[in-house]
Length: 284
Ligand code: GLU
Image (cartoon, rainbow, N blue to C red; front, side):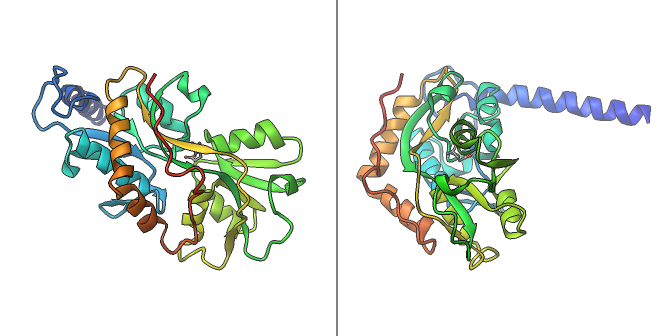
């Protein structure tokens, strides 16, 4: 037992050393910039969702969705080819910590820009504007918006603006169940354990269109917030304005529109045309 434990500890230490040794090459702002980056074979660690179809989705060894398409476009403009991208799962509740500890260099994960989060991390963008909405059973008729949730059980994800808004604005009327990801919330909904799931409309549309959920659930279609999706960065970064330039060029050259269309195809979702495409905000 003892040797086994030591073996594991040694392995962990070696892994830590190896990671530390490689760490220099993943500095944000690497990508061929003169930032004193050492180490050849630079790569970039990008945080995405792994279980949000149409946005950030792990499909075997493929990573699909609008967030991953924007990430690829931006990474390319920063000098990273696709095979230099390391995709890392970034659950809603972990995003700030992952940026602060260097587990990722940047995050494209339906990550709303908020003043609260800006105290801990920085944002480029926005590159998309969604709105918080509700997902209910296909045959539900009494839930039409956040005002009709009185006495209902609602599921959302820990660390999301969606859960926070319910707590801040509707806490008295609603029983909120929190789960680590929206997939678990949808499972609770189709199992009849909750009356509704709440998060951004584009996320709900992607989940509702999954073969397993089709015909069982529907998006209410009455958005009650503006979620400005930003690129999460460490506070101390030198990439924010380059990322904004890349986003603007993705919008200008038509790639943004193509990515929205291809990733929402078959979901019935159309972005709010008054708010999209957004104009990236100047970096702080
Ligand atoms: N956009 C919201 C947020 O950043 C909800 C979606 C998510 O949890 O990623 O919290």
